[in-house]
Length: 55
Image (cartoon, rainbow, N blue to C red; front, side, top):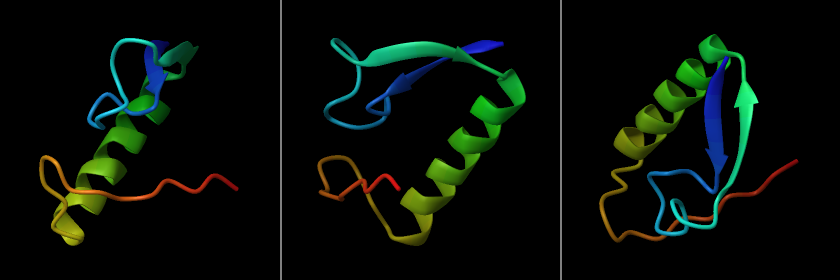
């Protein structure tokens, strides 16, 4: 198990005030890799805007 946060720590809204909970470590690692790939694919850098839509 590992601690996960929402909003993402890599986002401006992440960090202080984020909701945290324990999740399986392999799922947390996989999601981190997918998020990093998303940032790279769409050339999202520090300060860039993007929208998160949950479904």
